[in-house]
Image (tube, rainbow, N blue to C red; front, side):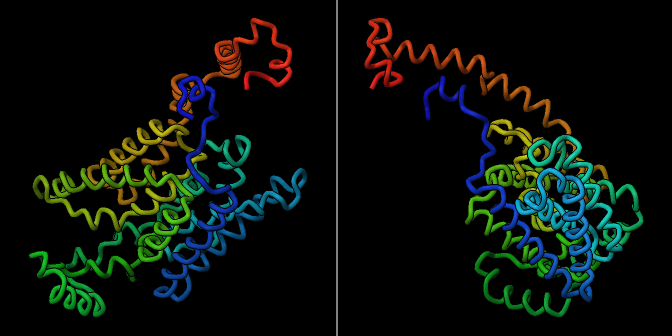
Length: 362
């Protein structure tokens, strides 16, 4: 509805067109696909991490909700989705027990401490990641060392990278007057140690395409985040490393450091963010600026995760402003409804019983 009063009375929406179970189980399927891609190069370790997190999260959900809801709560897929997203944020070589403890913390504490799905103060998967990161920081040492850029930093690539790069440089890139450097192809199927999300960029791109096709997330939030982050990375991303303005590497900025999973999963999740479009866009721009600052000038490879955590923590403040600016309180909404009825129903003053019996003017 376009009427100003109707807009004030409208309930805040989360901006998705799919029911929660559909979104959650869709996310579960593609998150497991990403773990499977990562597992191809680590003898199945990534799958073990994902399975440990999945089982632990389901058990935690049952532990908290089974007395009241039985098995119904785990059917919505929210606990499973949080667990598998958490697995994407963890290094592929981490001990599965650490993943299990992080998933249990994500569900039992982060999700349910304030009432469960829709009331959580932070994205549960992100809360679980912070728990693991600060509890066992040594588990991230190798991932931080490589940061998804091993082939690029070394100026070399795998045999597959060499073959594909040679083909593209002979056929496609001459038309653009450019040449693809070594290591960029390896980023799509990383074999060096790293978080599962960075080792499964191809699967994440499939996830992104599916989310667009099924309209299961607030895609405009993700696009706004990536646009601002890419602009900042291009403008000043090379300066901390001795470079110059407008020399930052956009491709590496977007395909490493967990940027894709930050944009399309963590930030796009409506339950821990703003409800209105203006509020969500403000959060996306703020998160992108923080991600850039943390990653390039703060020395934190996964700065995007910390940025979204900080934005989640500020979400209650933003939601309070949203309610004042965009949505009327229940008493205000009732008064607006009564005023609109009086303006549109002259029969009210004339005492038209037939009109009143039908609940208003025809």
